[in-house]
Length: 614
Image (cartoon, rainbow, N blue to C red):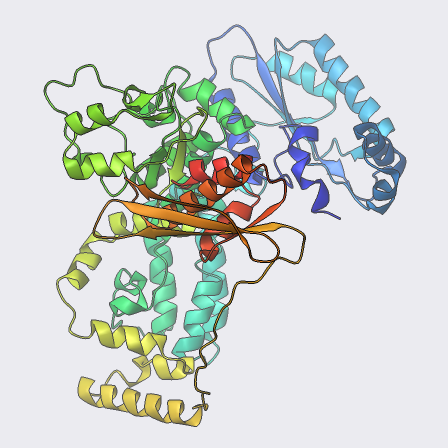
């Protein structure tokens, strides 16, 4: 029931409501609120006065009038049966900013709040509500406005949605609560007798996840991140108040993966940068969202996010997002649409080539945008121009980039993911490379036990066997022999008899429906830049109807060849004037991407879109 209206929620829910709507995050409200608080704090010399009003709803769920909710849903056009199944609707705390504040406007705001209480049945708790004025509003007027609104007048709102609303110079003090909460939890755990394997699970379940909410909006101080690393390292190695045990690996090296010879704990600072990169991704991928419009109007009204600077008196949330921008920039890539937004020599858009590998020829002054290399009428690459500007290898990669049949805007995609969607997990690996350079450099110089670590941690055995730190005082050779002996015994105890594989012969079968079947296939040689596609159409009895086979001059993967074969098969069905056909291919990945309901950001999105349009 909750999933059905999701596709319509963005259209019927106000952009001021960021939670519970697909594509929006509750952190959007936090970022907008921090910008408001920062603006109020820095405003001193303007004639216009501003105030922000924070309202607390008393028992919002209990006081909601169901008649009010039913009237709203009916007004929106929902079916009466579905309306009857809806049980709750809770609204979030909001901020209101007034320009040219006056007694009359304050009185009007109070009347609106009274009307809202009567209509919805909710009760505003004015004792817990508060108002903050910009610093250019005289104290006398502040007192008068507060009296009219019947709320407390405060210097600044302390917290919003559990986070500090404004972060000043004392950043360690603003986020001290994270360290205090974590310390209290780990102190309680220290009194329990736990193996290293259980300690590992506890650390990954709580100490590494507890700061995530704050890290979503703010860059935690590097010193605080180091303190957090030291806290869980102390817990892992068994330190007590009376005795500090030997730390066999530094807190930095504990963040190396198990394949690299350590415990695979997350580096808090690197993960913080990855989460801030996500906020930057939302600014460029959802430019019409409320938070994106606020930040663009405030910090980069005349340029793109990639060119934006700190600006005058920036908020700490904006500073934090800019700290995550290098991580985002390292992973983004342009998907060619009409080519108008992509700079040929400065942006990353060519498959398998970075910006540093592309050099601009001296005689190419007339070629700046990718659109200069595309014929707008045929929607194809201008091969002579591409071959003149680039080497044969690079030109082949460019000519293999698929273009959509109709012009669409260029799109940014996240290169580490096949479908082009941003994920914090993949961004973390990029940030990790930047933060842990020294530790990673030591492992890249050559670890003789690298392959052993991989086999050891991949072994399907209990964690107490793979966690060998408890026997660290023994010689390495003894430790290795013991581990291998345990592994052999475990595998023998869990050995299962496997039946011999039987080869299954596949024959052509007609479809269950009364449809023509078209079997298609694509071919690609990795050592070359060309491929081929072919297909055959049969009726219900298996009789031949038509076929196609052609050479693909430029292609860079087997999946691209398979997708082109499917598209050509559909085009053949249209030429044969077939209304209902079934396309059969041996590429499951291609079928899954075509049938996927979400938008595709991958480099093959143009071909997939053409197939879906057919």
